[in-house]
Image (cartoon, rainbow, N blue to C red; front, side, top):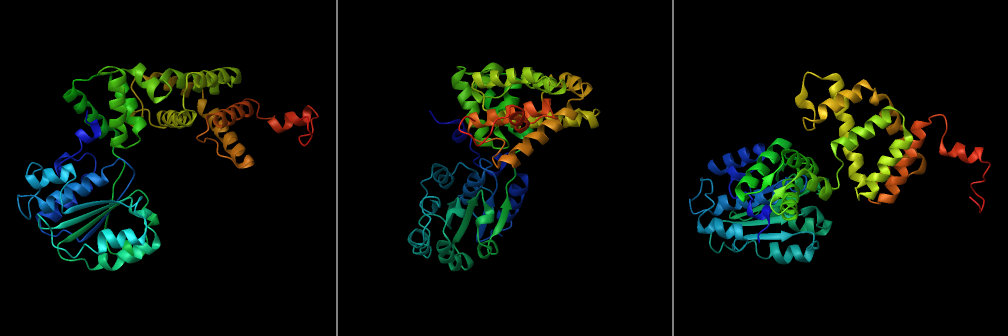
Length: 386
């Protein structure tokens, strides 16, 4: 079975979601016959960099001829989509980092004429992984390539690419795809695939993807298998390890009431349910952001990055003045991070739990820190008994 992100990968410029600034520029370049010899596509993962590079390759090879947008159905376009066109070279720089690989796979072959099409296209993925020597070897070829050659380099880390390379390419910055665009695309796929879906569940998948279409489609596919073709809110909360709106509301009210015991219970409940505390802290930050937005812009509900059912609960949190105490909690957590020189949240769930519980304790009792407790108990931190 073909994965959803491969099955629904855009085949033409018109299929691309959320990168209109890149699409528009490249379309004009193709139609006006002003395609550059080298491009750099950079941006977060899962935003369509490699896909756009393949569509550009189709534009240069399509049977429709020069100065036409690709139709995606001709023999040349299908060969590019399947990854077996002899004039399109896709190189993974992460596994070919050295100068020998660049010399062997690019420099020594770049002068040969195309086999089937009008151009030869080199797509170099994760280009920032190349060594300095490899970049230097590529420099002359990149500056003055043969007329029939186009380079497209893709990266998630453009700051690692030398300035000498950056000055010789046209750079396009891919942005994180908007939540509305991702949600509309997921809804379309659900209808095409015959999936039953819950609107709130899709909203959670969209937020969890954090602007990456590939991540959203991967989560959607997992949920469809898990739920036998049904995307439910309960399954989504369980699989993604996210906290429900009710849990976030209880935590916020616990902060507002300075009810440390209740907060400890809620954190313990999250741990027992297998929640990812790293993701929980991100959710809590987003939730508190929504509370602040509701406080200062109640007439503009569209600003709230949350589902409709949350807004009444957010109004209750505003009335309870949760902002005052949440800020203190975050300040204490940040102070603990600076004091101990360790991150507040890491990939280690046990370490995250310790940091969160420490912050709750000190926020509830701002006049007493854990260090003060050690002094009160008259325990020497350096002793073997400590």
